[in-house]
Image (cartoon, rainbow, N blue to C red):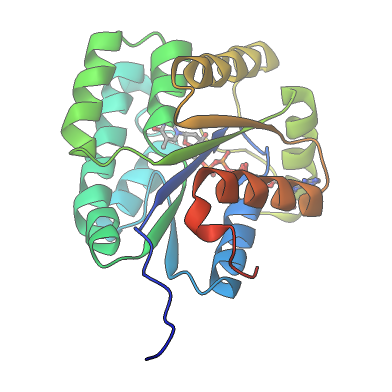
Length: 227
Ligand code: T5A
């Protein structure tokens, strides 16, 4: 008989944190690691991940919903999430693939709720509607002083399309980003079983290793796998 390892349950992992803390970089690196460990996985992002959700992303990040206020924006993010969950996240998990998402529902809680002042009742109602029981198994919150993250985004912006303007939320001032950081720390404190805070000021390699160590501790079925 062939010695085939039992398939492990598909996991849903989200990355959260402020602007420019290195989420996208680490999501890509984690996908490579999972591939080396022969774990089938996809990466996605919010807002976005499906054509309809990407259309909502463009609308919001171009600043076209800004004047509607954070409550309406929370509804828009939730509408994008509902499509994302139904069309991409749930089917992939059901097919046994791990799903790694660059931002998810905690971003609405942090940006529109705790920082934007949207009522917690609305935030919770939108979560219930959009998640449809698909809560992440693990949320990695990359934490960093906004001053440093700002510098990173600025340096990247000098080469990128957002050089002159920045997107909708990158334009907020430093004080706003400090409150945003506190919001993510508060979410982590309220959800210790799901969330892990990882200091993001380390090198990309060191951060990748800490994330992998966190994951193998959390999901013991991965700890014996080569990576
Ligand atoms: N939003 C989103 C809401 O308000 N509510 C919601 O519900 C949701 C889902 C999304 C915006 O929408 C808001 C939040 C956001 O404002 P986005 O473009 O996806 O917009 O914004 P971010 O998620 O912030 O994406 P960024 O690309 O700006 O930041 P990342 O992904 O955290 O950072 P990354 O990996 O792109 O790295 C930034 C720069 O730093 C360098 C990279 O090379 C890059 O240049 N870097 C490092 N440098 C040194 N050391 C390291 N360890 C580094 N890691 C990366």
